[in-house]
Length: 386
Image (spheres, rainbow, N blue to C red):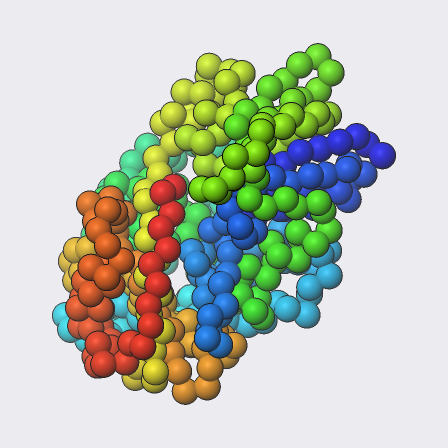
């Protein structure tokens, strides 16, 4: 036995760390304040619908995730996902497949002059990919000096950003290509273009749920502090919940992984070095509201992902037709749409009631999914502060 390990947070990062520590011989305990595992990769099942609550699309270039699923014994749950993306242009939906680079050459989204410029941009992104890995973008830090929109305008054709990259970045990051780094665009190009997509039968939460079966995972337990000492780590926890008045407990371990958003991590771990604390304090998060619309029938749209550029939709960023993604996401004949607003809209509307959020969402999404208003039979709003 290598020793005892504690993991704070049962999102996919925490569960992956816990599983790998267990494989390495540690006795592992995971503490999670909520009542489900998976965090932003969690899934809820409701009335026959399989609802992914935040994360939506996964690429076959996610080799570490695929290896994790195989090692956890759920290789049979890895299933193909639709990769059809719809992007509106002057009122008409244009569709491309993320796995087929040829679609960029034939799409009406770009004029011929822009298409000639697109190939060198993709080649540049491929060169950056050779310098860095998805888990170490800092290795390509020398290119992190301008926004995605600035890079495309300088190296390519501004229309490529306005028509394609801006839309895809809003769907991926809930933020604009005019504010996101070019390195974020490189990650998106290298992670999704030219690759098939996959998902998990039963929802993306199938993976963290499977990992949780291999380690001692304690839900509804909030970590209040993590402190290093000469003998290891002390972790203070308390049962969470509005009616819980259990006393605080202390657990000792040899190592601890804190797998929560940076603002929460700095609160839990006061011994964090000053340099790292500055980096964490400058981490830029956007609030996310996932609006799920459960439908009594399916819209007449074949794309799985509608990516909405700012020039077409200033606030609503993306629509995911989950019943198109994979067959088990909704009962036969019914539909499910996941709606995502720009992060700035989420921040402004954060305190509004769910009914208000849903009404605004349906009213705006109706433009891209005609008849949607008369299809909705249930809805749910899930809020993610970070």
